[in-house]
Length: 188
Length: 193
Image 1 (tube, rainbow over the protein chains, first blue to last red):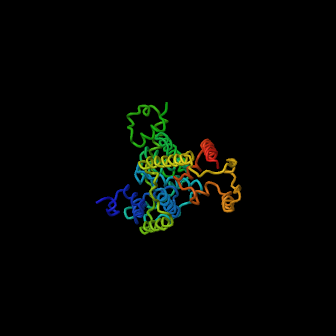
Image 2 (spheres, helix red, strand yellow):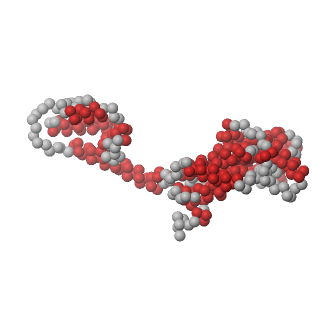
Image 3 (cartoon, helix red, strand yellow):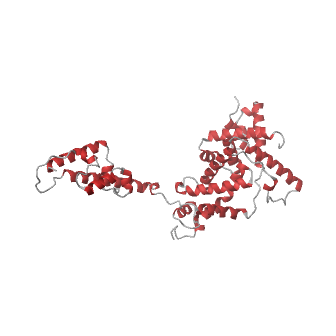
């Protein structure tokens, strides 16, 4: 059975992209389903609010769809989507001031294992840290987000940002230094 | 000399053991910097993204589906396939070359025509003057209609299909055009047109 005859759910990333390019219905839906969560989390880390993260996620997938034929499989589809996501987010954050995060944005966090006061403290600290990250210069923010929350190696980040490993490490170093200054002693 | 940012990052992330950097033992500044990096990494690592509603994911997929539905299908680009692109371009070049060759051959081959009375040879400039239709009203009309038509318009109108002799002629460079003009003049003179 060739890739064309196999169910979409059985296809690997490359074959799924080929199926999309062949106009196979549902193939891109499956790509979205597989990658929507990490893409949304990436966007949220940049903008710190649900509405913008949701809009940005849609934009990332739309751009990916438009540029699908340029995906050559040299990196994973996830890395490729991250690259689009970082570009979309950096363009947005440079055009728009970061919105302050409201309490309503903090939804559906599992609170069963922590006391209410611990949870509240952690939430407040989280809001402060996310707000501080949102104030970092664009490349520092991108580097810190990808390194801290998406477990990407320095080399992968360099590939996504189009820079060198040395530049990524320097950006990470300065991002952490600026984050400490922005947070003061309140969260340490 | 103090540690460089990349060295401090490697040690703070644990990818490089502190023991491999003897400078740390003797430098208070670098030790403090390392401690700050570790504390900030720890503080930042502890921050979660609020989990959206479970219904959100399907909602996001539906939004993307709607947005994508308004787009053209991203068909595979023919030129994205290097294996095909090279032979295709070779075929295209060969086609144009053949068209030029045929066109040139048509001009240089002596035209067998019935003997005609000797008349003055029309200057070749006539060819570039679309208004010079002479007494033939149909030719005059065509000349008038085509006078404003450039090569792009002619191509779009299908008058010079790719690979045709007309197409080849419209894509000649200045030197090739002059050569074509010379050949035409020779031919006109020889046939006594």
